[in-house]
Length: 115
Length: 114
Image 1 (spheres, rainbow over the protein chains, first blue to last red):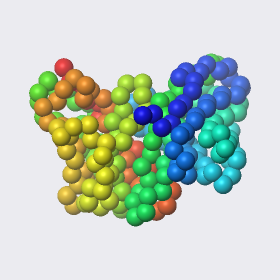
Image 2 (cartoon, chains in turn blue, purple; image 1 turned 30 degrees about the vertical axis):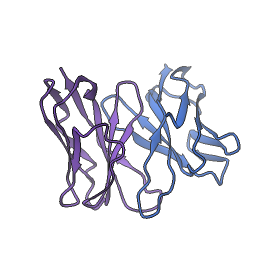
Image 3 (tube, rainbow over the protein chains, first blue to last red; image 1 turned 120 degrees about the vertical axis):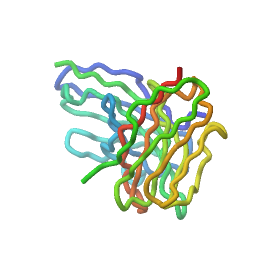
């Protein structure tokens, strides 16, 4: 059962444009929503994360928008650059007492930013 | 400082062979996770250690998969009698045992079963 659905599967954006990736979740116990960036041959690296007590979080050119009632969240990359070309994964986790958080990942979006 | 180190980077095994994949987490990280990433997919949880204790192995796909972390540091993921469907990238990640402590991933081991 896919608990985190991600779209689109692939995205092509011109340099300077806005990239938008969307995710939806089902488990209402999820309370931590990170985004990871993965380059070919590398492991995923944390980009930005949000908790459901805020509707938006911005770090540089990266913004997460969160809609708790719709159980959706999205990543916006402003002024997209060719160096942003990578695969992006949304993820979600729920707190477990006495245990570290286990992440459930979306299926990924391959972003290509054209020069 | 050093990140999470995984070895080997690539492993080719014939169907039926046993393989062992190694993970060296960041020093001092209590929590260690193994994930399986199929081609074009997101990582999927396999198992979780807190120090040497394996607290969750619910993601291991079959009893051919076994993981250990005997001294609470280095971990090994072992796959017995490999099958073609085991072909994937196996990712190891570690973190501090603190609320919302970020996961740090290694670059993975790409396993190809022929």
